[in-house]
Image 1: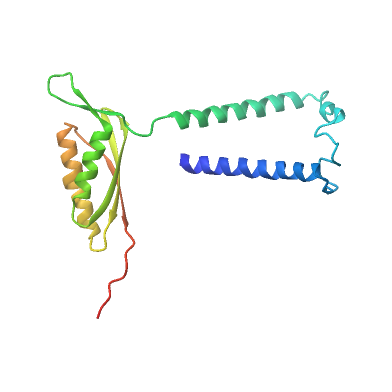
Image 2: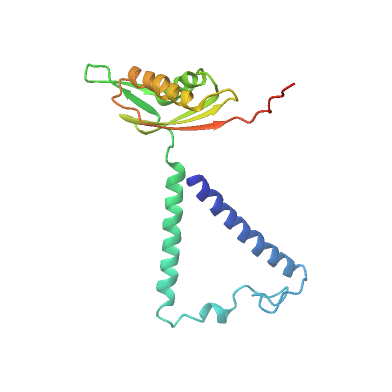
Length: 192
């Protein structure tokens, strides 16, 4: 979802900047603006003294301006923290039986899950991402199936072999997973 929000925000900001900047540039180069446009000509300012002081005496103006700016700052801070938040699980807590536990790199566990999943019949590629907490990881598995693959068998292999082996080797009680299967594009077989 964050990827979609990023693309929409960047697209809207880019479109607004291109339209506003292009129109100001066009007026600055001598193009006659329409009658409703904020500029009258090349030497006109964006906000005149009268425009800046128009709502100064109204009681709603400054609270509205401050509220809109505060909302913009809060949205910008939310977006920044969402960008800086880690998506991948950096480490997994492996139960060793002595009460201490050991730390396993999350990327290492992802690599093992990927290779175990890619080795299954009919699977061409696999991508694994671990999320969640280090003592309760969750897996997101994307599997690209070949032309000869049977989706039900591939799903049983991912859940019954690769994920079960990873769960047992890390000493986890459970390893919830979301598995997405998709078919790889291939040429149609020719019959002669």
